[in-house]
Amino acid sequence: MANPSNALVNWLEIPVTDMKRAMQFYETVFEHPLRRGMVGDLDIAVFTHAESAGALVRGEQYRSSAFYGPVPYFNAPQLDDVLARVTYAGGRTVRGPVQLPDNMGRFAHITDSEGNRIGLHEPAMVAAPAAVAH
Image 1: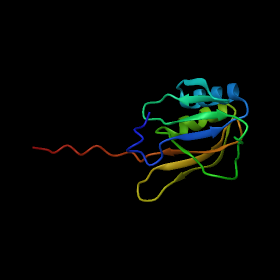
Image 2 (image 1 turned 45 degrees about the horizontal axis):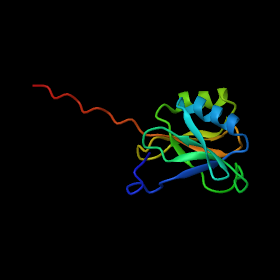
Image 3 (image 1 turned 120 degrees about the vertical axis):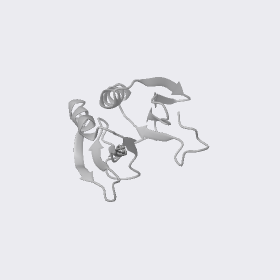
Image 4 (image 1 turned 90 degrees about the horizontal axis):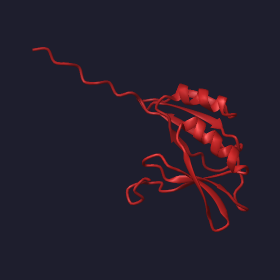
């Protein structure tokens, strides 16, 4: 989990209506398990990636949206591979990939299994320093 004292965003909740389906989608796309549990009356599945801070959440006040509200971005170092898994898992790409200016990488928007719009960001590859000939 990210250190909340250092992170600008220290927790993220993605609304879901079908927890089993949503967990299968995110575990397939990011190739990492989620940890499911209850917090009061909320059904949650916590992202267990190192430095992650968030969960899928099913509850009365949580509604999915592809058009309104914030768009969370996930790190996707191999964006094309991640987009292929999105399609395989039942989501779809709705924008991109788009090359960002100033060597900032690429991004894409997808809709997940619950209808949420999610951003994926592939950081720019940093070239290794050239070897110095002696």
